[in-house]
Amino acid sequence: TARIGGGTGYLYWLSRNTTHAPLQISPRQFRCLNSTIDATGDSYFNVPFSIAYNGPLMYYHFSGSTFKRGAHQAYWTWAGDSDPANPNTPRIQIGVNATWSGNRLIIPRSFAHFQDWLVGIYEGAIITTTKPPITGNWGYISNLTSPSDGSAIRADIVWVNGTKPTSGYIYRGCKVRQLLFANNVFAPGTTWSDPGFLKESSSWDSYGFPTGYPVALS
Image (cartoon, rainbow, N blue to C red):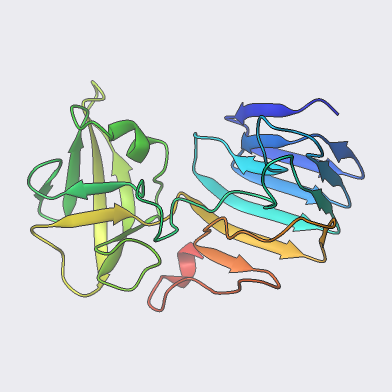
């Protein structure tokens, strides 16, 4: 039951009928079934489950599991970087940090937060003109490429709602995609916190992909 941190780069992780100390991981897919994540007394991760830096996270499923709070925080997980109250939600200033070439957004490696975008976007990821949740103009990435020397991200974007911005800021909508959180139990003192997935189904927060998002990507 030792705590696990930095479990990244995996395509699939399954925990079933087991007990974990706190987890800080970011496999592409994760399932936690009929298990316990116990952060009792922990003051390092502070919450039972947290998302590691590398992403994106495509599908996470928690079912029939129990969460026990840490020493200093009551939440089962941290609020995601799509939380509008989070000042660190990744953003790009058009014409300053990145430029358009037609409908292709070119993000140079010289951009200070290049890596934040590199680890958090994927084909199907949403780009929006307002800090998430998604309430303003938005589009989705239809194709991702780069020069052979890795000097930039080339993101082809299809704008769905509103018009493509030529100035101001755009935001990386969510590096976390789908969450199913069903029939889980919070031990006394443990509470819900929204991890900020693009689509969520739980007793606390349930919402789908925004209207106009292609069915083929969902």
